[in-house]
Image (cartoon, rainbow, N blue to C red; front, side):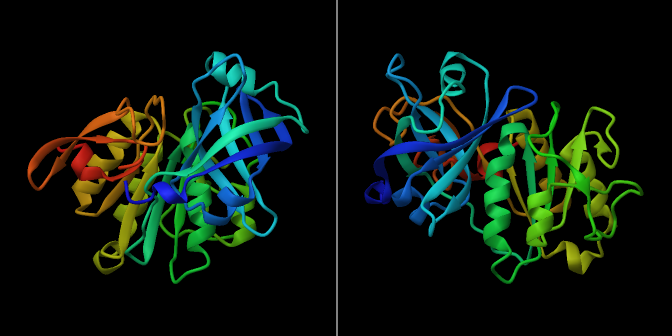
Amino acid sequence: MNHRDTIFLEEAPVLNHRAWPGDQFVLRLEAPKCARTARPGQFVHLTVDPLLPLRRPISIMLAAPEEGWIELLYKKVGRGTALLSQKQPGETLSLLGPIGRPFEARRRRPLLLGGGVGMPPMIFFAEALRRGDFEPLAILGSEVPFPFEPQPSRLPVAGMPEGVTATLPLLEEWGVPCRLTSGQPTEGVHRGYVTDLARIWLDSLEESARAEVELFACGPHPMLEGVVALARAFGLPVQVSLEEFMACGVGGCAGCVVEVQTEKGPAMQRVCVDGPVFDGYRVFSQ
């Protein structure tokens, strides 16, 4: 593993911990070493409580190198995240990070697709892309209430259905166009999947503009499979961030391997350090 020396062990004080509807939480931790080197798509491995020896992997949503903190969005789904949700400002968590292979944009118009707790890497990526020579568009979806207050966007996005105007306020503040999707009827939010809205937008583009698009996605496995199928239909490159259970988180136990297509044929690779970001076509080959 060629990036082992960039993973830090820190005792990270809880700075802020906010609950949102749908058992979702935003956790801010003081972790200056991680914040200084974290890149979009990477994650941290947290000891959530002394009662549980195994750490939990959580994607990084924001990193503030100068202030020395990172933010994580997670959903309470099991014993570990239930214990994590009880942590209060002033308590300390053991943190390993940043870990993993990040996203890398190569085309001018990155299309960022995030579903549920797959939204954080897209938010982090959008923040990085706005500082470069890129024109990102984010489409974020959730089947529970969003962990933020959607607001009408003032940033126009050509090709979007009429009335689809809701956005994530932070991305709006950054000047990054964003639109939201959900299966629940919500004003300004597209009724459907992120892939549905992405297809509508891609269909609206001239061929020359579409050739500048590259897809990036993080979310549930069926969503990622759909994103790769969408990319294949339009002949576009695609990168996906996988979510897997893991034990060590640093490549030693090989407990998080997935089958990936390589030039030499199928191979088992570790999500924690060979990923979590992979070429989508190599993971979803059909």
